[in-house]
Length: 115
Image (cartoon, rainbow, N blue to C red; front, top):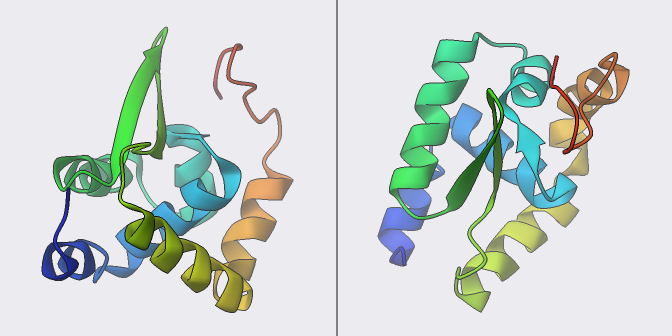
């Protein structure tokens, strides 16, 4: 599990921080949902997600050709508390991302095709 220095280094990039907080709030998101919410390219989002997975924050699962990301359930409580506190105190920071995510047509249900 990440040390405090490793956690904050991993989250020091704005894209990684936003993706992590959106995933923490939503429970699980498909790469295509993150591409829409973060308004960025799929390769860039996937690269950042790989870094978050590499530092132990996220786990992924495949469903057909789609990949879904969620917080690692084995994260220490202090990491979950930091994420939840940050999420609660900074809803306005994620507002544009939330609007884009909510406006996404045909959002995947975790059992149906994505995008």
